[in-house]
Amino acid sequence: MAVNLFDSAYAMENAIRQSDEYVLLRKFYNEVNEDESARRMFENFRNIQLHLQEKQMMGQEITQEEIDHAQKAVALVQQHDKISKLMEAEQRMSMVITQLNEIIMKPLEELYGNPNNQ
Image (tube, rainbow, N blue to C red; front, side, top):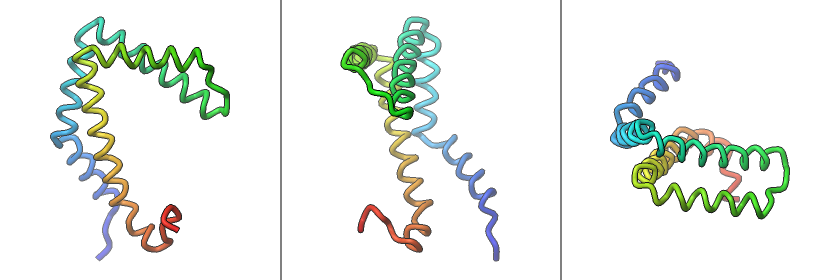
């Protein structure tokens, strides 16, 4: 019997939306967005992250000044209770997605082998 992978993917999407990790992430995300100062602080932090990621992807050097600025932004958002909770929930959700990806890729790794383990 053939399996429709897209049906399975949509079922996984639904399962993710109902997971404790996603429900908690959405709760903390909404709390940050409902607090004007937290929202602005978080947006600023995300913009700094995106800027540095873009520079890395384009092969541009990140200056020490940019690193210092990013570290200060991280320290600032980690002190904000709502943002800190959101970031922790993001990390948990990211770990779940990583684990799901490992499960999904297992058949291909078994077929081709895992180049990281060679």
